[in-house]
Image (cartoon, rainbow, N blue to C red; front, top):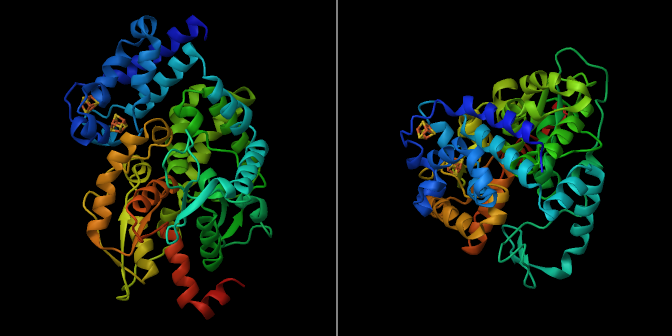
Length: 445
Ligand code: SF4
Ligand code: SF4
């Protein structure tokens, strides 16, 4: 249990964030969870009332407080729609940190976060071990999507259709330093794949590397890829979160680079928005880690935004060979305002017509650990996304977040659909491969 004086200090800090909530209820209309349950305690307004009385509630029934705070996708739909600009996600995350500080982490989460996630080499080994041993325990269910299901009853996996873990983390074979001293006119990026791309969807990272090469971008891939910290932060484990922020910043701090580029909407949003918002919890190297966050935030770019806004990639006239629809990840559109650039990347690929789904920015229901803890609710929320995708008749659905990709694969795989699910950068890389042969070779020299 945390020190009471520290808890009081943290509770006080929360009060400032809460004053701007007028209880207007605008967050109700956009909350995907409220849309399913109709429970006021699930919507932002209801949770903020709980947080306002946290000092009392935490003493009365801390487990119930935790349960209510955990019932949230952290999608940010409420924050994006809030007329008062209440920093809802920051409040929820700080409240989760307080309740976890008070109750302590469960033994399972402690083992995962402190035993594995905190130690990237050990985490890689665990995932590699699981990737190599998963074969006899899983079976393929949808060849187009590449999804599998558990062969035997599993309390963790349930009836999910999932993408198998890669036999080896992508960065292990892709590690590279900047090949040459900086040349004027060449852009230098640190490419941060994030855990899901690195260990489950390496094809996204491979596509990104092709596109970097085509555009003559110098790329650095670290020999170690620590998690951005969002799973630990979502669980209120600010110790692991702070540790992981420090590990990443120590890798990047002495490099000479222009941009930190990631293909993961959640990593981008975590680094650009949550690292600064939660800096009070980041304690490494006597404040030196915290001091470097603004510089990192300034350089952080979603990969679609990087290629469109920085490298000038433009849309072109699509050939009439099929249709693609695009799902806006909450952590790209609502958190960072990035919606046009992924569509420009799709249009730059030039092979498919964009067919917009209804409510393209409606949450897919994934919510990271929400999906693990509340799978049935996650599926119900996702069913609307699945139906919107199917209604377009598109051959392909693209989205800029690997977590959304996994949720959409699960939803479509259960529907026995053969719609391809991919990241916009994969379609762009594919088009370069198919159409830009000689120019590509020239660019890669
Ligand atoms: S969080 Fe924002 S939208 Fe929701 S009730 Fe408060 S002021 Fe209104
Ligand atoms: S973050 Fe999403 S799920 Fe959570 S309260 Fe806000 S809108 Fe609802």
